[in-house]
Length: 118
Image 1 (tube, rainbow, N blue to C red):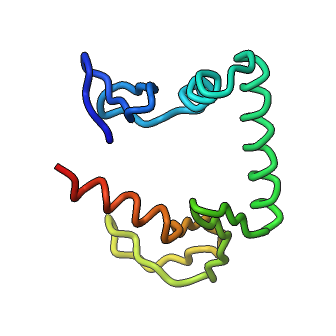
Image 2: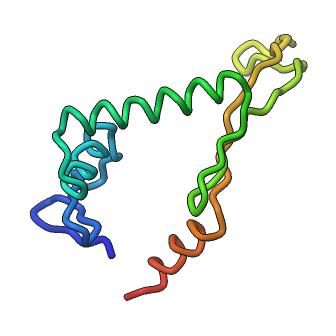
């Protein structure tokens, strides 16, 4: 359950982020440090390693599946014709790769369950 205490949002597990703020890598390190008890330096190294592994695999267009969380997939978009909204001129939009995330059913259920609780 998420509640607000002195301008901070808390997840009920003791970790707080600033109200309305996004969770950052520093916040992730802090949360893991509080739960696991390793030194912050060790936790920061582990978190950085995890993100490096994920980035390397995505750059190689490998799918990342995290059970209970979701899938990260690199998709290829083909080149297409577009229009400059300011001038109305036709332009060529080059092909590119995009990253998509599809949440797992477990994550979706957890998100929707929190919305329905008073």
